[in-house]
Amino acid sequence: MRRHRALLTIATATLTALALAACGTSDDGTSDATSADGSGDLNLVSDGTLTVATEGTYRPFTFHDSTGELVGYDVEVAEAVADELGLEIEFAETQWDAIFAGLDAGRFDTIANQVSMTPERLEDYEFSQPYTVSRGAVVVPEGDTSITSFADLDGKTAAQSLTSNWRTLAEESGAQIEAVEGWAQSVELLGTGRVDATINDTLTVLDYQAEHPDAPIEIAAETEETSEMGFVVTPERAALAEAIDGALDTLREDGTLAELSEKYFGADVTS
Image 1 (tube, one colour):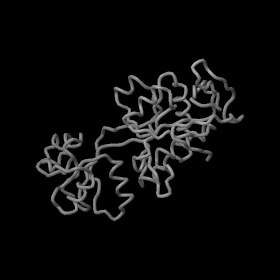
Image 2 (spheres, rainbow, N blue to C red):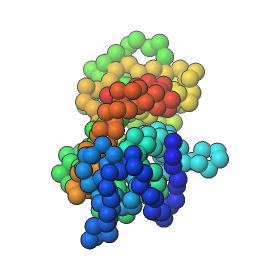
Image 3 (cartoon, rainbow, N blue to C red):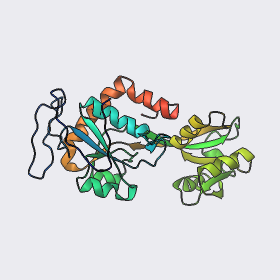
Image 4 (tube, rainbow, N blue to C red):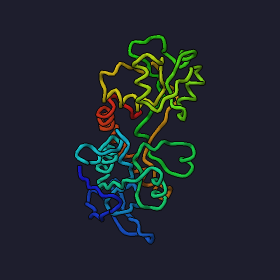
């Protein structure tokens, strides 16, 4: 896969015949490149390059490995999308607090950083189809059959961060709360039998199980409600969101998305 990286320094690449049918420069300095499949003006920051904002500090989605290379599930999905569109890719590592301001200012084309499709964001931005779908999960010690639903938390003790929305769900389910600082402490208390369960995001649980395959925990129940994450663009780049949709369709059909999901989570979290 063709790729190169820089921190917010974007090089202009020559468009290949397979990548783009036509190119030019608009009055505002953005690219008038047309996608390889003829889907229209992608309005890219830099000709022939998909410029993607990501944190680089959010394991397992976007982080640096022991060699210093930027890696992760979101990183590889973005690379696969760019490759499918016939584009080079450039990552702009940006702190989360500034990432939407940078998108609004036109410093990059899109964000790949597990951006959830909240009602508020859907009002202001265009999203691709989701490439990650997550649910809330009740986690219990391995082999414990006393909890098989959220209703079974009634009267049980759940380890939850006091600032987490999962605490609210645990309380609504009737659980007594044991305050913890985060997921790691929750797992520790589960292992020592000090709590009966904890609620967290399925992605967090699957990532932990992938890293710790012998961990004596299991998912007992999941919410019906889901949280969906996709590539986000500003409204003037709606054509880019559509092009990314087409790329994701192909990557879903040929098994690439499922393969990347299995690599990082040991399960398919793409739908």
